[in-house]
Image (tube, rainbow, N blue to C red; front, side):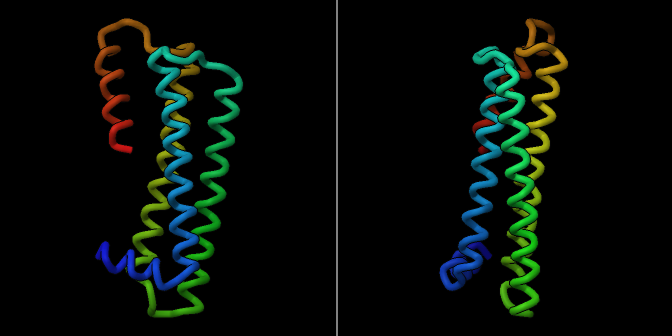
Length: 138
């Protein structure tokens, strides 16, 4: 399936463009996550600029998701029966990339609710470990 996905991207410029936009969504999600992780671990201070930047990035991710979904539907209408599996995989990935943005925005809300970094407490060490483990998954 993965080979089919790569072959389809090579043959169709529109799919390649959508794939590039999907990568942009994922890169933006990673940027958001790293910003919030730095705040939650105390490496950076929680600022209004951080808040505004996270929401700005999230809006960009949401815009790309809508754009790619529209392009995929148009592509499948214009070329019925072709690229259906690849299109469905791409649709699933962009949905997940959009969720990364939403979940990261939720982490910002956690940081705002507690005034920044995790405080020393019963679960502090585990939260920090989870943040590091999660970042390694990106």
